[in-house]
Length: 542
Image 1 (cartoon, rainbow, N blue to C red):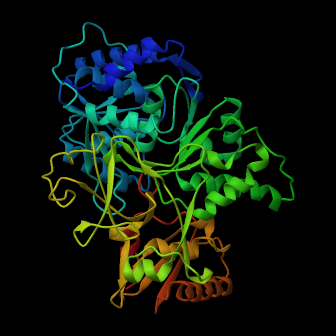
Image 2: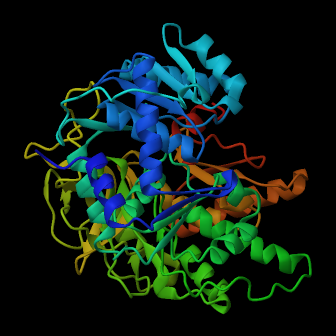
Image 3: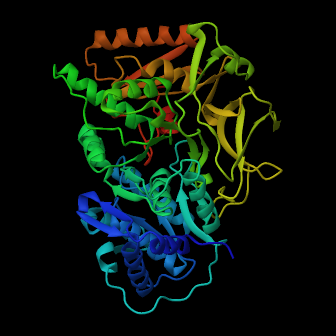
């Protein structure tokens, strides 16, 4: 019988009785043992409303103790926790997303927070036949926990993908997957009882929940914030992070962009920012969940060096929900590495060759080597490819999912059982570099172009709002770029379009490109913040 997540956490609660989880906005601090007891109480309450072993329990809950109570409660019952995204986009769009997930999983119970009364009412109306339960009603379960027979090889967790390039699918993870995945995170990063993981990422996202569970699995403390606490005032959050003595953080690339932009905004207001909070205790910051930008890495390291941030603390990583998060990590103590690849060789020949012309260079950030238990290979033309060849990244190993819930094994698996990630990359001296997504490859005039290549040219232009842009195949079979800008004057916008189109043609060799400008915050995003390329393309004028 394989080890279960609840069994692992029970053992850690006994081994590390002084471990603490602080819920910043709640003003609560619990030991792991206290949190597990709340999980058992919630399990009794879930049983009281009819949840049984094997049932899927979905929940729409913010970061906090309630999220963990329900997740652990389902675990203790032998039920399957299914975290759902908090409301995003338009109300109708969100309800459609939730209804699709609930129907796909055959969910009968959805738990929501009392503070989201309107959401509960709308969800109840949109989910006929589904019990929509207030979290507050699950606080006082009593009696013995019902026995269940799930071992480490049964379904323990379902993480629905965000749907940036396809309809959301339920990634099935067993206890064995999760336990192996947590060890794959903590071992190479040397996470342990001396660490304190500061976390603001939403727990319904795989990087959020598995970062937290990784900390709990090795006795590290956790300080948990709501995402809005960071997003509204990035520098204030950073000060709280430092004051709390946090040593670890995990975040997407935009996190670093926002902090740099906030610091530079002070200078634009003619305020001279001091060195800021002391960041010398910040041991590692896992930079993942979206493409890692070389310019962002350099800007952040330079901007916060005076505050004590060390370059070797920047930790670019690669992972996904299908691998229980971690796939490749860099070695500890190493500064970020980059590869200046010849852009045309990458695109036209699928080869990683060092560039000699700065104008034809695409700078890629290394994301390390496979974590313990995970194997990585590059496949091109249906066969494993040698180093320096661009191909699809394939993975295998104990942390990797066996498939998607209620779906037959399809194209995501190779004939010999490897999982196809849908990401393109190459290996150089054993280091993995990510080139883009297979589905984001755009063919113009019979030539392949990477959407990320075009976005990298556009995003750093000062006229682009917070580097937000998306490149897709346009309806006229040309490359289309939809970019946000705060410019309002017709002449300014026309000049920006002309400049960007010329810049993209010169840097990528594209024969034709069309730039479309939209207002800030208009680009559609998934619950995890990724741009929805299908919707962007469907919104383009014919």
